[in-house]
Image (cartoon, rainbow, N blue to C red; front, side):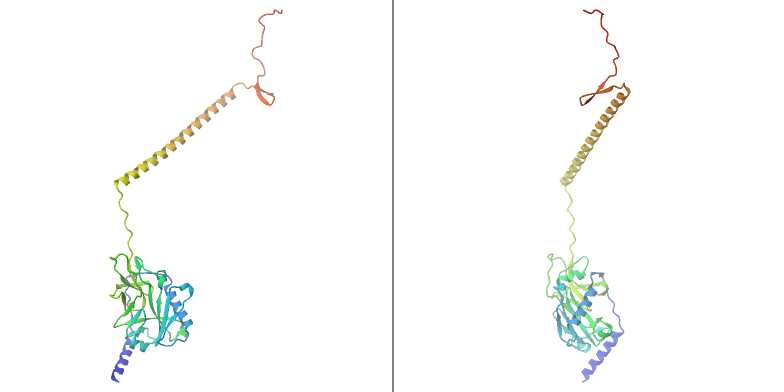
Length: 305
């Protein structure tokens, strides 16, 4: 009897401390999220439509629409007191006892997500590569759902942390790359941590989790050898000489054409200055003809035989 009373008092004290406490989120960097918050709300609303009256403590697997093929989702409705005393275990999350939602709600939903092949579409961390699918743990208040709509909650983890287990891990080809746990929080905040011996992650808050490795930096181009540099200069010199020859030929052709036109123009001007000749038609041809003779013909003598 005394142990139950002490447990109840402990439960009440923790609940009061949660109501007046604040969380400080340590953000080390930002991630590029694409409609991640909208995805969380959609999965919660879709789960509620598929199972409008779920039983408390039963985990339901949600069949998602065709455009979410490769993604998995499930949810379970729990009571705060039972959750505090027993915690909850799923295939990917081990939530120990002694944890309550923030702000407090008597009844709430735990939504579990596995983004699968669509992970990089919604969560993309610069300079890092995902080697596991993104697993999500999102908490929603169900107490006043019909009055104010879906309301997301948080967790207050004071004792043992939450353990995240990844079903499949694709180790990096480069063994020198260090695997790291990443937690994608609200407002595009990111927290990095070490991977446990069992290829899992430790968390003290809800959110989305994955294991990443640093993206390999592009290898620098090798320095050019003396032969490559010499070949480059030969190619440049050949192209320059060829272009110079083409320009020289074009200039010579233009000069010849100009001189020819000038010569023809000079001849035309001289012909205009000289005496004009008449013209006459012989058949179908037009021929020049003189209007008269400059020297009249004269016989050498008047002797007529």
